[in-house]
Length: 265
Ligand SMILES: [Zn+2]
Image (tube, rainbow, N blue to C red; front, side, top):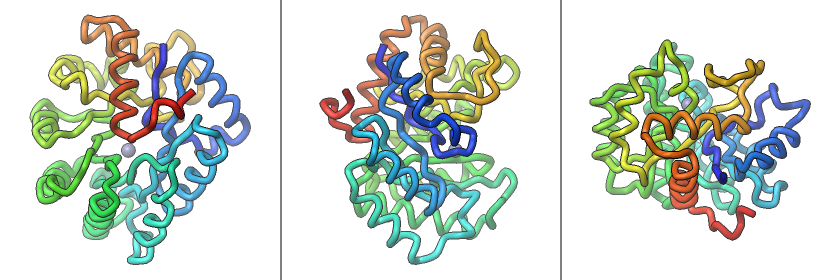
């Protein structure tokens, strides 16, 4: 089985002691390459630099998470633009809106998000998107800019049927995590998953967060090596086999991030 984890917070402190082992363990179960999520200027730079040293085992996104939007300045986009020119960078993000706890003021989040959309449009790079408790403003921004954006993925989708259908109408890819394995919060996703066109489904762990609750072991934190478990859960919901889900989502990931398959050995 070959899978691509499209959302790994690989520079997170949880992995400081064993980052290379985390990559190797994932590779041993067919999960490679990993797409490292950038969430601030400093973090995106680290992600890009780290990916550059892995000879195609990792790629990176570069962007400012809405939690960090208060750090957004006009020079931020200039720095992100310079970083985004490197071949290891697969998308602009993670970016978007998160009004759940408003770690950054909503107005600043919107300004930061618009800056990222404009940059993705300018560079013709896909967008790696985050939305929480901010659907109306988030969706409106995507609608305003839909013709300029090449591809976009709503990562860690946990929303409603109505939101999903709006995203699909806009042509979004949908990122599914181990949330589908959560019998308390994730069961509403099962019928929704069946409505996602199979060429727009992407899989991600969001490691070290979101440990799939149905894992036989109970690890302290999530790792990309658990992505096959998520693929199996998705396959069971779609009434197909995990290998089919792997083949389809692998191909979708290559297309989405523009990764040349020859580089992903
Ligand atoms: Zn996110």
